[in-house]
Length: 194
Image (cartoon, rainbow, N blue to C red):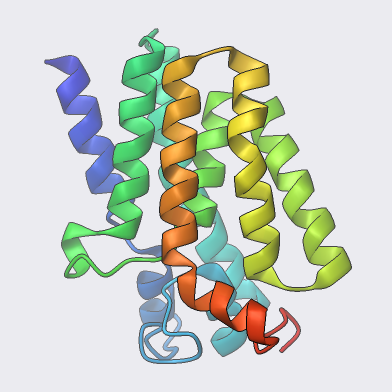
C-alpha cells in the first residue's frame, strides 16, 4: 500500500508544471504558446531570461529528485524506486493538472538520477554541461547525456530494474524530441544563445 501511495504522490508531484507556474507568477507569456511551445527551462530561458529559467530548471529537477530520494531513504527496493521514478517522469510528460500537455522531461530525469545517487546525477549533468558548452545546442546535449544515462546507472547500481527504467526514460525522451531531432538533421535547431 505504501508503494502505491509513493507512486501516486510521485506522479502528482511530477504533474506540477514549473514552467507554466513560473511564467504566470512572473507575468511572462505561456511557454506553451511561445518559442518552442514547450513548457521547459530552455524555452523559458528564451522567452523570459536566466532567472525564470533557473527557477524552472530547479523546480523540474526537484520533481524527480524528491520522490526518489524519499523512496530511497525509506529503504524501498530497486523495483519500487524505478516505479516511483517513472511516475514522477510521466507526471512531467503528461501532467494531470495541465491537460496532460507537459515538457520533454530532461530536468525531471536528471532529478531522478540525482535522487538515485549524486554520482549518477553528477555524471549525467557533467556530460550535458560539457556538450552544451561545446555545441551550445540544448536538445543535442540532453539527448547525448540521457542516451548515456542507462550505462551510467548500470555501472553504478548493477540493477536491472533501474537500468530498464532509465532505458524507457531515454526512449520517451527521444520520442519527445523528435521535432528537435528533425531540426538537428536539417541544421535548423536553435542554439541556447538564440
